[in-house]
Length: 211
Image 1 (cartoon, rainbow, N blue to C red):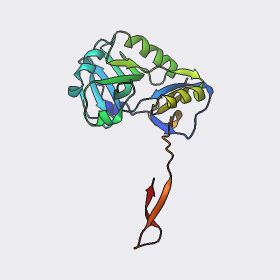
Image 2: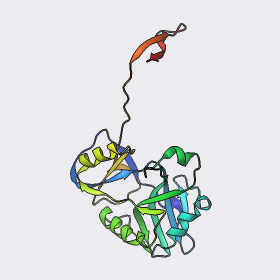
Image 3: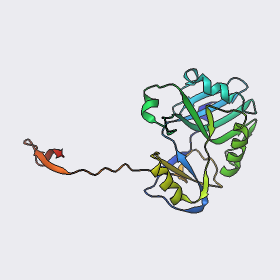
Image 4: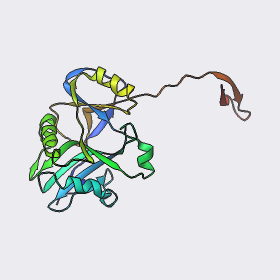
C-alpha cells in the first residue's frame, strides 16, 4: 500500500541569490502547503508533509486527480489559494479560504514504476503529459532551463515568493542536498527613522519611531 511515509520529501535548500546554469531548470516557488497526492487503486488522497490526510477539504482537487491516467500514482506539489492576480496567497490559504489549487511539480510513482531514481526532466515530462487529462484545479508547475537570473527578476517583479532551481538530471532522493535550491524574493521597504525610545531597565533601545 502506498503511504506518505514511504515517500520522504525532497528538501529544498535556501541560497542567497539567483544564478544561471544550463544544468538546472527553474520553477516558480508557490506560497502554500507542500502536499503529496497519492492514489493506490482507490480514490486519490492528499497528504501534508506531516502525513495528515486533508482530502475531505479539497474534494474538487481529488476529483480532478481521478482523471490522471493510472490507478496508482504519487505526485509532489503545492496546495495554494490564488489571489485576484493569479498569485499564490499563503494568508488566504492559512485562513481556510476555499477555491484551492494544486500545482504538481514532480511524479514519484506511475503505476507500478517507482520513478524517484529517474532524471527529473523525465519525471516532469511524464507528469505534464498525465496532467493534460485532469484540468482545473490541478495545474502543472512549468519551468524554464538555464536562465535563472532573468527568471528570478520576472518572478520578483510579479510579486511572487521566489523560485526553485533544480538539477535537470537529479533523482528524487528525499533528503537535503544541493539538487533543489530555493531563492526567495526579499520585500524591501524604505523609511525614515525619526527617533528612538530608550529601555530604562537595560542597555540599548526599546523601539524605533518612524515617520
